[in-house]
Image (cartoon, rainbow over the protein chains, first blue to last red):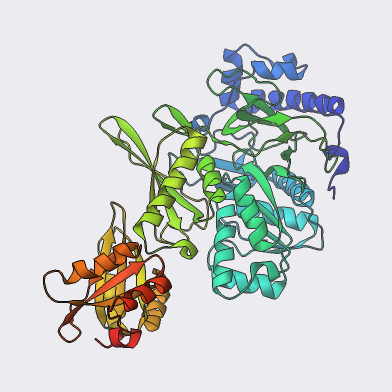
Length: 433
Length: 143
C-alpha cells in the first residue's frame, strides 16, 4: 500500500528537480538563521544562490555529531524556542547529549514519513500496532506512535519492559504489527514460549524492527518464531527519528524518503562521494525540516544505495542496503574490520548456538583478542566435554572462515547474557589504548 | 541396569557450584556420587542422586542447563587389580569408556564405579556374561 503515491513514485528527474529546489531554500534558511552554518558556508565562500544542481551539494560542508554537541542545547535551531513543540535528546552515554527539536511542521513531517513507512511494510488503517519501542527521549516510541496515528491504525503504546504483560496484551488486543528492536522481539518470542504461548498462534503478521543492526539470519529466526514478515527500518534522531527508510515486503533494500532526506554515500576517510552500489558512509541532508535542519549530516552508518525502481512494490524512492554496521561500532582487531552483525550471521547458521552473544575485546601484551561468548542451546547440551569443545571449535572455525580472524569462543549458560529492552549491548571493549 | 545421571553445565563463575548444592539441599535430595569435569571456561558436573527426576526438575526450574544420561554402575572388588580386571573385559570386548568415577559408599565389601560407555545395551550383555555384577538403578539410589 502507498501512503503518498505521488512522492513515493517520483521519476528520477522530477525527484532531482524537487531536491534542488528544496536544497536551495534550505541553504538560504540556515545561512540566514543559524550562525554555525553561516560561518561554515562563509569559510567555503558559498552563498545560497550558488545552489543550482545536486552537484552543488558536494561543495557544502559536512555536519557531525560533534558539531551538534558543541551547539548543545539550542545552537542549531532556526527558530525561537516558542515555535518548538517537542524536544528529544540522546542518552549522552558516549559524550554530551545531543538535542533534537521539532516544530509543529516537523512533527507533521515525522507523522507523514512514518505513515509511509508503516504502509510500505504492508500496514493499513485496520492494523493494531503493538509499539514496544521505548517512549521517552528516545525517538523510537513516539515516532511509531505518530506514524500509526497518521495512518489511522490502532496504536498500543506499550513501550519496552514488562515482557509477560506485553505478551498477554498482544493476545488480548489481537496485535497485527509488532514494532520493537529485533533483539527485544526475539526475547519476547522466548518469553511467550515459556508462558506456553506459541508466538505463531498470535495475530501478528508484520514486524518492523530497527534501532540496531541485525542480520538476514536473525530475520529468518524472527519470521519463523512469530510467523511474520519482518521488515528493517532505518532512522536516526538527529535527522528525524525512525522514518528515514524502510523495507517493503520484497526485502531488497530500504526505501529512503529522498524527497525529504537527501542521501549521499561517501568514503568515510576521504569524504569523497561514492557511486551507486558502493559501500560507504551514509550522509543525509534534511530538505524540509524546519526547526533543526541539517546539511550533509555524517550518520556513521555503512551502507550502499541504488536508484533502480523496486521490482517488488514499484516505488522509485532510492533503496539503501541493510546496514553493514557503523563506522563507530566497527571493531578493528589485529587490523581486521569486524562488525558485530557478521558474527551474528555466523551464529545463526549454527544450529547448536543461540543468537545471543557478547563480544569481549581484550589486549594482552599489545595483541588484541576477540572473545565471543555464546549461549549453549539446552537441546544440545552434552555431558561430554569433548562434544562441547567440538562445538566451540566449530563456531571458531566458522567465524574464522568469514572474518579471517582467529577468535576465542566461550560457551556460557543459556539466558546468562543480558537481554536488552532497547539497543542490545553487544561489545565490551576492555582494551586500554 | 541403567542408572540415571544428571549433568549440569556450569560456567566458570564463582559460586555456581554452591548454587547447585543449595538447590538440591532445599529439595532434600541426597548426592550419592559426583564428578566434575572442567575446561578453561566451563565445567560439567555429573551427579548420581537418590531422586534423579526430581533433581532434574528442581535444577531446571532454577535456571540450570541439565541433561540426563544413562550410565552403568559396576561392582569392583576392593583389592589391587579389581579395576584392571573390569577394564580388561571392556578392552577385549571393544567397549569404549567415555569417562568413569567412583562411589564413596561400598556395596557390601565391593567398591562401586560409574561408567559412561558408548553402547550401554551391548556393554551390559557383555559385562554380565563375564561375571561382572552391575547394580540396578534402585540399588544405586539407595546406596
